[in-house]
Image 1: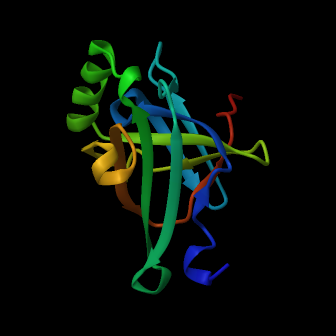
Image 2: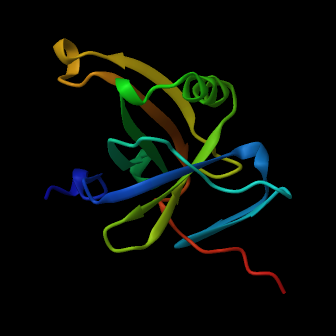
Amino acid sequence: MSPDRKNENMGGIFDAEYAFADQIRTCTAVEPTASMYFVEGQKWQPFPHQNKIKIAVQPQDNGIIYSVTCNINITRPNISAQFLQMIEQMKIRPILIRYKQSDELRRVIGSKANPLLLIVEDSTPEINEFNGIILTFAGVQPHRQLLYEEFKSF
């Protein structure tokens, strides 16, 4: 695998969850881990009906910052009115994404200080050989994806 693509993960992601940046009270992100303390009553929410998830983290400016993207394909039969309302919220409220890979470890992209923004693309089989929508979350952060640790209270 080329060095440019060593941080790209296709097929090894089992699930992805999101949290809006404004739902997080405290976020500590120190390589190699991240922890979040949520506003009372808030928590990670699963993306419904995940079909294909792709996460990519690429260094920019000689590794000073990293460009992060998450693409999630949602098939057309799984697009409900409630799901479309969720997407509208994601368009205006930056988020963080937590995902689990085949190694069973959870990782995080985005942070309270560097959240991800959403771009929505409608897809048809003629365009992308896929009938549904593609959610693309993108942002920059000062580190690679971080291992997620539950916030420890003392």
